[in-house]
Amino acid sequence: MSLDAIFPIKNWYFSTQSVLDSLSEDDYAFLISRQEKQKYKKGEVIYKEGVFPSGLFFIHYGKVKKYKADQNDREQILYIINKGELIGYHPILAEERYTDSASALQSCVISFIPKEDFLTVLNRSPLLNKRLLKVLSNELAVFANKISIFGQRTAVERLAIALIILREKFKIDTIENKVIQIDISRNDLAGIAGIATENVIRLLKDFKSEGIISTTGRIIQILDIIKLIQRSNYVG
Amino acid sequence: MSLDAIFPIKNWYFSTQSVLDSLSEDDYAFLISRQEKQKYKKGEVIYKEGVFPSGLFFIHYGKVKKYKADQNDREQILYIINKGELIGYHPILAEERYTDSASALQSCVISFIPKEDFLTVLNRSPLLNKRLLKVLSNELAVFANKISIFGQRTAVERLAIALIILREKFKIDTIENKVIQIDISRNDLAGIAGIATENVIRLLKDFKSEGIISTTGRIIQILDIIKLIQRSNYVG
DNA sequence: CTCAAAAACTGACATATATCAGTTTTCCAC
DNA sequence: GTGGAAAACTGATATATGTCAGTTTTTGAG
Image (tube, rainbow over all chains, first blue to last red):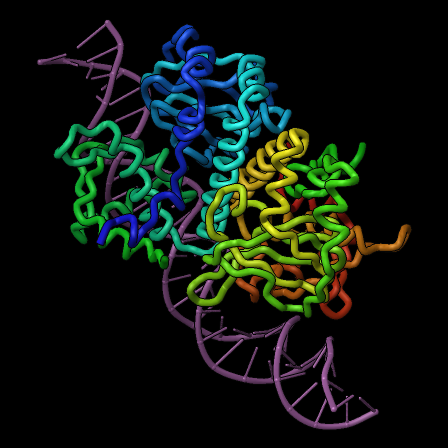
């Protein structure tokens, strides 16, 4: 039995890769290839909530977090974005300001795509239109799932789910047959699971003593994914 | 200063009404007017999570809740849908099964719109396409907001926000110059705010003693919306 | 390699919230 | 209007989780 049969990752984690698949070679070149690449240092802000977007961003290299900041500078992390994905198309489609912020989780290489270019391609490509409708609907389903979890589940369950998704997110950086290394700060982990940092640390200690994970420095390895899914209390 | 300036309702509550505005008269007639109307009793299920959709629904009269059911039959309510709105288009656009369930909050009159009809109109209307992209992006922003609230805020704040939104939802049933009556069970209120029913009851009692709300039977009236917004701790 | 700053971690504590087991009130079909 | 079922409510209790105030470890620049 595959892992996805017990815990369907697609319900929790949606990539925009398929948006780009729907672009013709010409459109892809027009949007992405010809754009100048820019470097972002770890922690550098890519865009900020409340600002009007002038374009979107393509992640060539690195990882990005999208988040909403609270009054007492706690942040709720909404997405972790991998290389090969787009960010910032929502507010352009909604014709609104940014409703969240984005910053580099590690050193990143990113292209800026002007809003006009994106809309030009969108206008001439019915396939991109259709694909975007599909992607947005899927993202909504993932968010609905999250709301349900955040409304109903305990901290342990939320942390377990966060770790399962992060395992997928960090798979991409892993050389085949090597173990997946989740490299994330306890603070960001707290921001993903929506719990206090100290609680993350305590719960990770529990997982460790149960043999579910191991840690070296701040890097987490998942030793027993089945047990972790059980602890997440996921019912498919 | 308008209420919307202090607490922008649109960030919390998005209606699909604007999708229908983008339909031509012919398309509207094709999709909705010619369909047979069907009655749903209070509590009756409209569709269930996990099933493949064969169409969508237009609410002529009444209110509908969309929710995800938990293992221990607690439910997380995702939307309250008013008359004049559509439900069930997400899974059709996503080409997936229903990811939530819907049932009648009161007696309802609803039309079923076959999937094929919807897709036909979608194919011939670029405006509907564009409008749907906008609506879905907006819904995502609302959900992101909710995730942030559920991840970071207390029960009081979540309940306060739920009441502010419900006030908008029940405005539609109110004759001009009459006070808005929120008619919802404590259990559903708990399902919206993601807290325990008993806790809802206790917190409502607090609001009552602070003069923020009054109740007659199960009906809630908001007496002091400014104070309620303060208690919601919303920062725009 | 060294050192300062940042992050991780620990323990004690307060409290918000869920749970359980009742009682009272409301609702609505008859 | 009446009676029974469902919902609302209450009080007691347990506990999960956040907060605070430290100490220890890790990290990364120089």
